[in-house]
Every structure is written in structure tokens, then in C-alpha cells.
Image 1 (cartoon, each protein chain N blue to C red):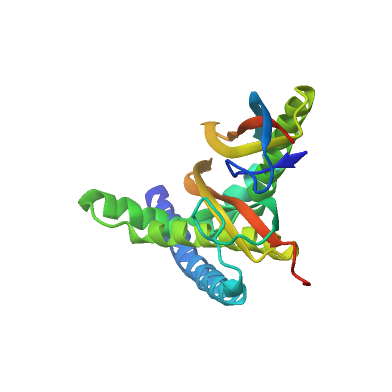
Image 2 (spheres, each protein chain N blue to C red):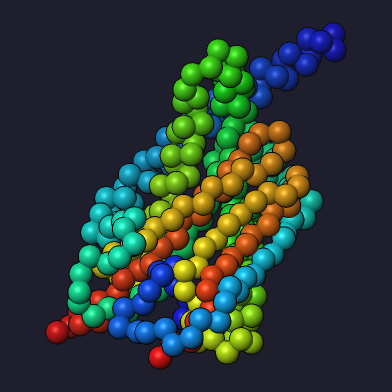
Length: 104
Length: 151
């Protein structure tokens, strides 16, 4: 399965558009991480726990997007966009969407 | 007595935020500049189409980072907020976050032997990490890997 944020692909033609596919993941961190981060946040700098958390969460969302695309019979997802919103204190939603297509 | 100890505690927080925070910031900035020079040969550009017609393979690359403000910065920004104007402490924070995210994206691209990254997009999110603001920056783009490299 090919994943790309381009709207077109070089040397490939789109045979069929299969519509929008999406994947999302809402995650919050456990209390230990939270306490560590709030201590760290006194002094500034990178909050590694959060970086990892959001990274994992993004991977999970992407996985869901790919599963959905696969079930539609697509062999590529193009024009992929990421979007993030913090929906509550300590929880963030990662949203990935794109067009599922069948390439020649 | 309680009032006094509270003031002492507050000043301690401010001081430690200022000292440790500015040391960490200087160190981070130095490492960013050093790595940026390293990755100068691998540019990241915003244009939506690749700049060449050679055959290539492409791959989605991402880089992200969460960076927190420190206690002193937060306090200073609160003061600046009263009068308005440029909030320089946060400007430097968001600048570092964006450059770090770009660098991580480039690191991933360089592992793929890409010659450059195009169609770069940025995503920024505020994270509520305790009382002190933190933000996440995600950079993503398409790494271009020339397929006739050895030709």
C-alpha cells in the first residue's frame, strides 16, 4: 500500500477513485508520564514522553487509514493530510485522511 | 509567614526556570544549528511538485516534537500580555519546535537516501501539560529518492 501526500503520482495513473478514507486515534497519557511532564515543564525543553505518545498515536491512526483503504480494494492513498486537536486536558486526537485510489 | 514562604517558593521556581531553562534553550539552539548545517545538502521545500523530471521513487516522511515552555518564560509572557506586543519568549519556543520537527523529518529522509523533501506541511498543536504551555509541531512531506542514482 502506497501512502503519499502528493495529489498525483509520477508515472502512475489513477484508475479509480474510491473516496475518502480516514483514521483517528484519541490518546491520553498515564498519570506517571503526566507528573514527569509537569515537572519537566518547569524548566522547559522537550517533553519526550509526549513526543513518543503522539508519534505512536499517529502511527495507529495511519494504520486504521490503511486498513480502511485496504477494505475498499485500494492500492494507494494519496493527498494524505494530518490534523491534530487537543480535545480535553490531557487528551489529543490525531486524525489522518486521504483519498483511496486504485493505481494502474 | 505563609505569605513569605509562598513568595520564596515562587521566586525559587522563577529562578530555576530562568537558569535551567535558558541553559537548555541555548544547548538546544546550538544543536539545531549544527544539525541544520549537516542537512543543508537535503533541502525541504514547500512546492507541490518535484523540481525535476528524472525518474524517482517517493515516500511520506514525518517528524514531530513536543516542546514545553519553562516557568520563567510563562511568567514573562504573562507580563508582556498586559502591555501587548511581540511575545519573544514564545516566538523562540515555537521557532525551535518547528526547526526540530523539520530536522527529524530530514533525518528520516536521509535514511532513505532522499535528495530532497517537497510538499512540506506543518501542523501545530497546543498541549495542556500542567500550568505551563507546551506545543507539538509535526512536519511532513514527500521525500524524493532518485532511482537512477547509480547511472
